[in-house]
Image (cartoon, rainbow, N blue to C red):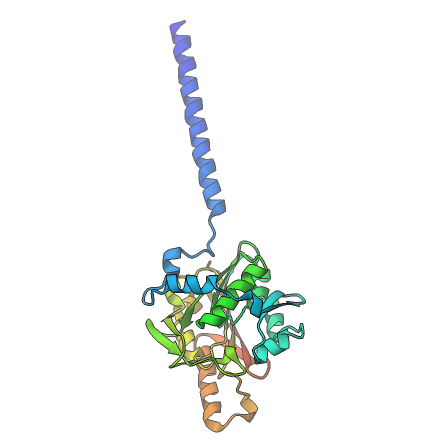
Length: 297
């Protein structure tokens, strides 16, 4: 009788241990299923040099919606647009997609459930499409250094209830420092370059953020693309993403003066040396494909 009772207790203990093990395994499985390789830690995304978070938060909270109209762009979503004369916003006000050829490339080359980097996101003209193409598990990291434009980007994401895009107010390039932009370019806010007299921003490299599982990087940084690419060299070599690069701003190669053609050629050569083929897709946007794609996540 005593031995039978002892066996029952041993079986009960084993059953409890087994149930505990199952619980642990289930928790581990749940943890693995919840793990998202596209999510970067908040620490990696925080400013290191320019600590203006409180000032920026106050600026974001004072967004003057009364100065904006909401315009719907078929296939993209809705945008807050002010009445400033601007080359891109003038197109959007007509309900027309900006650079539909680039959107076509994004649709073709962005992989679902991956990380995409939008270097020079402006107000989200391409970011909104990227958000659709990466899906719920994917992430888009959208960089825009100008305060006003960054605020418009943030509110356009909110307007469209987008949860898989992380807007970041950093300039991208080579090194780590605080830079100034030029004052906003008249008639082309998105064409504002790094210079002096405008907004301050923290400049960092793409590599410094530790992005993973990167399938595509779009670069539109007004002549600063060479520095951005060098600052992304580790990310590019590891993940071999598709690159969509605007080279030398709005320059048209066929009509460019010799010194500008030489700069464009140098930019293209720099990309080719990373093991890429490169092709002009329109006036100034280039598509670069890796010769040896990576299978690493």
